Image 1 (cartoon, rainbow, N blue to C red):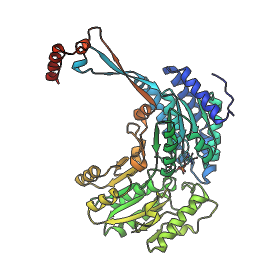
Image 2: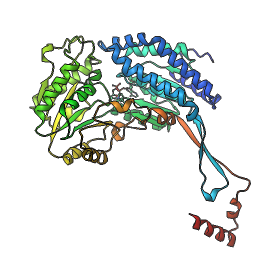
Image 3: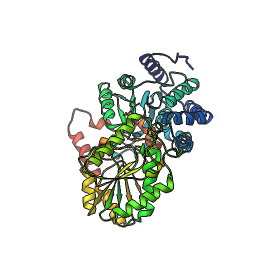
Image 4: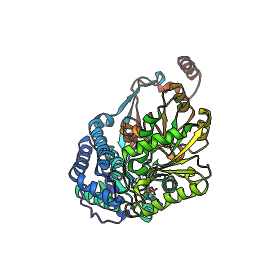
Length: 474
Ligand code: NAD
C-alpha cells in the first residue's frame, strides 16, 4: 500500500487517489474483495463504538435502531457485494444483429476511477459507508465527506478508515459546508450525494463544471395514501412505525397522509393507539430518537406554531409526557388535520414526527394532489382494492413504493433505490448501485469473415444490391 499522509490537504488527497486510479485501471476481484473484507471487519470490530458515537451525536438514539437501520443494512449490503461481485464484474455477452455477423460483442465493466461521496447525518453509517462500499466493490477509489451534524460518528469513521485503508484507496474528509463546497468542486469520476434537494442543486451545479456525473439521493414529501378499502388499525401502526422511526428523520418516511373524507376521527384514534403502543412515553424514552440539533427542533416547532396560528387542528399525541426537556430534543408526535396547502408544513419536507392528514373525496382527487407537487422519493398505499392500487401506481411517478407497509422497499437489495425529479436522480443498492459506479464499455470484435467491405466506396450497383438485401432482413 502506498503510504500517503492522512492529513493531506483535500486537493492533494484527491490527486493521490486520481493518480492511483490511473496507475491501476484493471482492479482484480481479489483486491476488491480485500477492500470489502477490511470494511466489514472495521464495522464488526467497532460496532459498539460506532453505535455509541451516533448516540452521542443525537442525544437519544437507541442502540437497537442503529443495529437495525445502520449496521444490519450495511452488513447485508457488503455481504451481497461479496457474493455477487464475481458475476457483476464479468463482461456481458451481447447478441449481434444479423447485419453485423459474424462479429461478436460484449460489455466490459470497468471502475470509473475516483468516486466522491457526500453523506447526511440521519443514518450516518448506512448512508455514508453504504455507497462507499458499493463504489469500492466496483473497483474505485473513494473520498467520503460525511455530515458535520454527526461530529462523533464522522470523526470515528475517519479514524477507522484511516487505520484500515491507505489514503489513496479510501479516505474520509471532515468539515462543514465550506469543505463540502470545495469537495463537490473536485473533478471526480462520479459524485454521489445524499442530502436535501436544495443542497443537491448546488452539488449538481458544481459537478457540472467538471462534467462529473452525479447520483443525487434527495428528499421531499412522500405521500401515504389510505384507500377506502383499508383496515385503519393495521395501517395506522405501520404508518406510525415508518413515521416515527428515528423520530421522522428518515428520507422515505411518510410525509403526509391522504385519507378518505369522514375517516379522520377513526384514523386519529387508530394512530394515537399505535403511537402509544410503540412509544408509551416520549420524554426520556430511550427507544425514541431525539431531533438531531436545536436548529432542526426549532424549525419543526415553528412549522407547528404556524399551522396552529392558521387554524389547522394540531393533535399532540403524547401530552402526558409533559413538556419535552429541551436538552433531550425528543419531540412529541403530532397529527395536523387539514393544513392549508400554503403552510410551510405542506411545502417543505418535514423530517420530523409531524404527520399532516388531508381528507380526499375521490381517488382522482388524491392522484391530482400528488401530481400537482414535485415527484416524491417514496410513496405508500394501504388497502385491499387492487384496482384502486394499480390506478394510483399507474397514474403517479415517484421513487420506491411499498404497498401495505412503509419504508420496506429500501431494505430489498434487489430493488434500485432512488428518487426522480426533485427527489433525485440515479439509483443504487444491489447491481444498480454497482453499475452506477462502473463504466460499461461496449466492445465489438470484428470477424475476419466480415463483409463490411461490401459497403465501401466507390458506391455503385454492389452497394445497392447488398443494401437492398439487408433491408429485407430487418
Ligand atoms: P444536507 O443537504 O443539509 O447535507 C448533506 C451533506 O451535504 C452534508 O455532508 C453537508 O456537509 C453537505 N453540504 C452542505 N452544504 C453543501 C454545499 N454547498 N455543497 C456540497 N455539499 C454540501 O442534508 P442533511 O440535513 O444532512 O440530510 C437531510 C436531507 O437528506 C433530507 O432532505 C433527506 O430527505 C435527505 N436524505 C435523502 C436520502 C436518500 O437516500 N434519498 C437519505 C437520507 C437523507
